[in-house]
Length: 144
Image 1 (cartoon, one colour):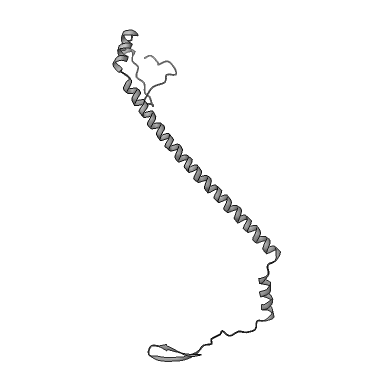
Image 2: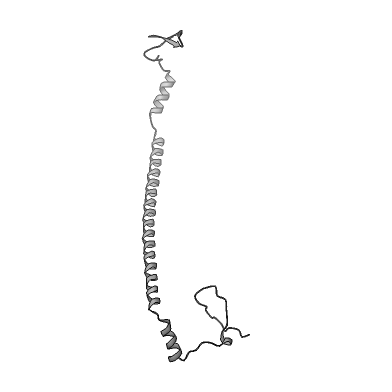
């Protein structure tokens, strides 16, 4: 089949094309190489089987680790929601208890029934505390 190449508005060259590619007979060396490449020897098959096993074990281990991670994340979320619920419950209980305490009644019982009184100016000792709630006394407070 002959065809012409058109470039622009003129035909520049004549090009011949063949419907089928040109085939040569391969040399005996090429034939031997192709036959050797087509056959798999025992070492190659063993290597492929070992690599497939390693890949299978690795994928299985990865999937198991991933499932464990997801389960642990769900457990953490469950525990965090439980902690949040317990904190809310504790705050509500604390507010209920603090609302039930009558400070005037405590003062009346302390002063009238227990004979307690406010300290004098010489009885008060000021100390620094890192905690805002209370101070623990491990030894006697030094006298000035």
